[in-house]
Image (cartoon, rainbow, N blue to C red; front, side):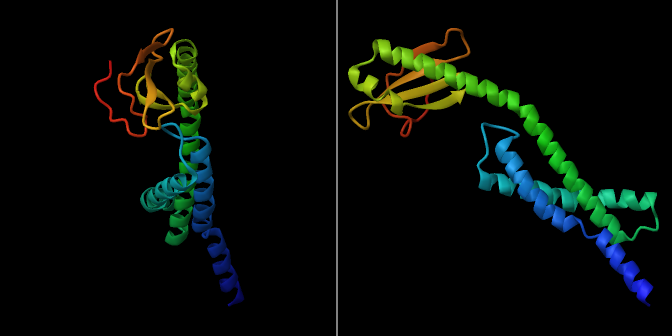
Length: 197
């Protein structure tokens, strides 16, 4: 009787890794998605946690059972519950590895985006320093930029009036960057995109 109990305990111990792994890897994946985003410019921590939870639920519910079936085909004596648990754990680990791979692969794009932002910021500062009124030169540290697509940015420097800004379209896809004055003085917070030059 005692041997049966020990054997069951041993099987339960061997087959009880999926949910602890789910919790630990979901938290780890959230940090991973925050530090190494798989797309875009970055992911805040809470959205990264939601995204990690989604990916890991898909892994446990969708991929884990298939891996469990494959494990039972290789070892028919393996109980179904333990095979499913191991399959889920393997799927979770694979998900973390995939997210890490995509995050590392996306780092180059993040560096390129950062370099483009720095380049457009420099072009804006040069324009404001040489061609703008004093009110805009005083407020250059409060400039903000919106990426409109490709290498095109709209960067605005606030003036003395809150609703009037000096706005520039800066295209970093050419070298040196193309800078055009936007006839609209609407700051980026109230800007409605239209056909840019």
